[in-house]
Each structure stands twice: as structure tokens, then as C-alpha cells.
Image 1 (tube, one colour):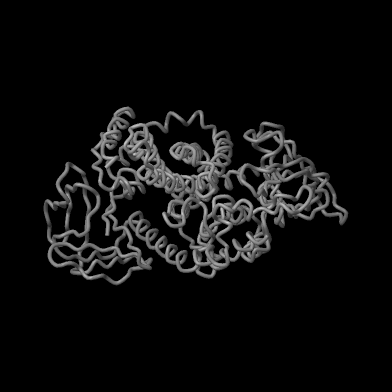
Image 2: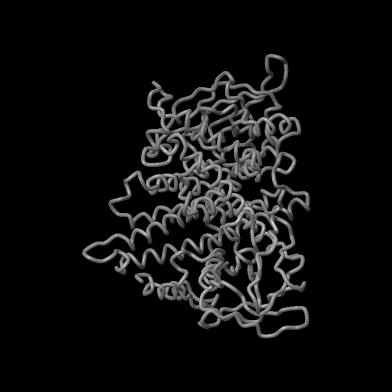
Length: 598
């Protein structure tokens, strides 16, 4: 059992949470003074956390790591039925038992503390499901060939002739579909969906999804983005990531929702996202694709679409394309762009090519539209305001991609540390060399900083969304204005971090029996997407505001860690003044290095 100190959810607040055990449900409890507490009843996902003993309330007023004090917790004063902790003196943030008495915390009302407990319980349920159901399926009937060193050849159909060569193997995609169906039956796959369509309905969805993405990609048993539980190559996951569903939910007409969302749940509606063009990427307000009003053959009003789109991922099995086209205005104007839901079999849709990539198979198509006609009912969202819909997709998707990349970086850093300790060169392990120690400590610190920034940004996205909904506004306008730069930077640095860690595998990087090659390619690809998002968010004007937040985040990471890193467990991290310079923070973090080679 670990005492977990969290500062990520709300800046300036400190919460004490108990990390869940490996059991099916979270066990959040304390044993204080006296005999060891027995295992409590499992609280699951309720607001009551049974800590056994008498009923009281626990108030954490101020938590401060002061100095090394050999695994002791000091409670300064006790008032009646309220325990007030003024100072925490601890050698490291690993506490097996708290010994001061027994207590039972009644209903915990703080929503951030509840979220931490509920997310922990949710992730424990997922772990149990993956280990009991998904991993056995992965290792059955040689299905593991899609995930080990044979994966590229097994996943790719090289037998088909012509432009369709190199697409995903149908057997692999059927295996992924089977895993998703099992996850749906277990109640996980639709977690991020709207409540009326089988989702959780939580108002902290971005935080939940980011915590889940990080957990799945960093897990030591099935992490690294290369398993049937979570695969980064095509963003497959047992917890569904379907931003098109979010777009339909927020912007679709009732007729569109009734038609497409249930079909999506059945796997009968799959759409590509058509914003980028052959000659236009980051400059999304400049596009060649045009949609002109026309009268259709049945005398119904409609539009005729001409132009092209690139990176139409999943076109080989898509039923529809969401196409952004200019319907009015001039290039450079955000107004005048409209989104259309276009059936895949519409006359005039020409598959120009599928782009082969460094990591195969490919499902990234370039498409040309030649006088493609659709009715007015194909418009998604308001006419001439489709760019807001595109931002909905990018923000929902990119913050989760950042969490996945950060988790993959954590997985790779842990593997790099393991490799450095076990690799013997000239009679001693690589980890004995400072040239190896310094970069790894720096990468681990950057990963921890980035993880908290991602979770904090996700929490702020939820808060902005909830305020906008109450005020009757579209949340994506507020998110773009207030948080677009943070989302872009989270994604950019998460993917860069994945790339940097691989320097420590040296000549082993090209080998396919480790996921480095896959993670490097995926990270590079997502890096390009994050640069698009940065351009859309006008990051240049927002950068100065990020610097003080990064300084504070570094301080929080080094001073009060949410979750212990594997190779940091035995290290003492000194307190850092939140106003300290980045240079001072870096110098303090480097004090850890002398412990690394032990």
C-alpha cells in the first residue's frame, strides 16, 4: 500500500490518496495507531471509502516534506473528532502502514479527491479485465505474431496488387474488432461516449481518458503501445477513443445522431477526418476543396464538392468521410468552412493512393473529389462554421494522444534504465557511466513534468467545458482560446520525449523484438499533427504564459510526486522553491545522479 500525494488536479491544493492494490476493486484505507487494520470492504466506485474504525473526518490542512526523518509520519495535533495534519516528515513517499489509531472517513465530498479514487478503481478494473481476457486472447493461436518481431509482415497484406497493396491484414483487423467487442461487453469500450449512448456521463471525461491512456501505454506488462489491449499504431484500445462520436454528439442534428451513433456502436459507421489537403496542412483556413450550392436530380437543395484530402486514415474500411470544404468567404478566413458527412460510395470519390509509411501497414489515403454531390442534410454543424468542429476533433484527440505518448515514454525510459543496468560494457554496467545517467535522469524528470501538465490541462478542459455548458456556449471556442496552446505543447513534447529516449538503446534500436521502432515512428507522425494544432492555436502569442506554469510544475514534480517512478523509489528529492529558476530546478534534479548506479 502506498501513500500517494497528489497536486495535479487543482493547482495549489494537496490531497492524500491511497493507491489501489492489484485486487479487482480499489482498497483505499489507512491503519493508524495500534494493531494492523483488517482489509476493509471494497468501495468500488462509490463516494464512501471505508477505512474501518470510528467515523470521523480527515482534514489535510497543509502537507510539507521538510527533511529526511526515517519513514515517520508526524501528526502535530488532534482536535476532537478531527485529525489535522500540519506537517509530514518522511524519508520517501512509500509508507506501508500509518500507526496512530484507527479511523473511518465518512463521505468524502471533494470532487478532485473522489476523481483520484474513482480513476484508481476504474484502472484496477481494466487491469483485471485485460489480464483475464485480452492478454490470453493475444497469446492464443499465434495471435502474438501481430505484436512481436513478426508484426509488420503479419499485419500487412502485401499480396494484393495495385494501389491497395500494403493495407492492413483482415485477420489482424478482425482480431482487434473481437477485442473491442469483448471490452464493450465488459463495459469499458464506450466509457468515453455520451451517457445516452452507453458512456459514463462523467463531467471529468478528459481527465479520465488521459489517465487511462497514460496507464495503458506505460503498463510494464502490456504497455509500450504494442498489445491487444492498447496499440498506438492505429490507436486501438479497449477503452474506445472515438472523437467522431463527440463531434456528432455536439454538432449533429437529431436525425444524424439517431442514424449514425447507434450504427457506430454496431461497427456499421466508420468515418475518416478530412481537413488536411495535398497543398495545405497547418494553414487550415486555406484550402482548395470547395462546396458550391446546387440543385440535385430530385430537385432537393444540395452541394457539389470538388477538391482533395490527404491522410484519410481508415479509408479502406470507412463508410463515410467527414469533409471540410469552403462554402463562402475567401482563403485565410476562419469563417466560410463547412463540414459534410459524405458517404464513401458517392460517385466522384477517387482514391488517388495509399501512402506507404516507415511502419507498415498503411491505411492513410489521398482522395480526390470530382463533382461529388450531397444533400443539405449532409452538413454537420452550422453552415460556414465548420472549423469549430475540426477543433473539437483535434483537442479531444490530441490531449489523449499526448497522454498515450507520455505513457509510452515512461515505458521506454523504464526499459532504458533496465537495459543500462544489465548491459555490461568493458567490465561494468552502462548505468555506471555519467554519460548514461545524466540524460536518463533528465528524461525521467521531463516525463514526470509532462505527465502532470497533461493531467492538469485535461482537468482544465473539463472545467472550461462545464462552465461553457452552464452558460449555454459551445465549449470548444473557450477551450481553443484558453487552452489550445497547452494542448498543442503537451502533444508536441510528449512525442519528442518518445524519440529522445531511444538514444540509450544505441545499435539495438532497429531490432523489431522491442517496440522502440514502432514508438519512434508513431511519435514522429504525431509530432507533425501536434505542429498543425500549434499553428491553429496561434502558439506564438501564448508561449510567455507557459513559462511560470512550467516552473511551478517542475517544483510540484520534484517536491510532491503523484506516483513513484520505479527507479526513483529510493531517492530523496529535495524541496524546490516554486519561484526558483529553471536552472536551479535542473541543478537540484541532477543531485539524484549519484544514486543512479547503485
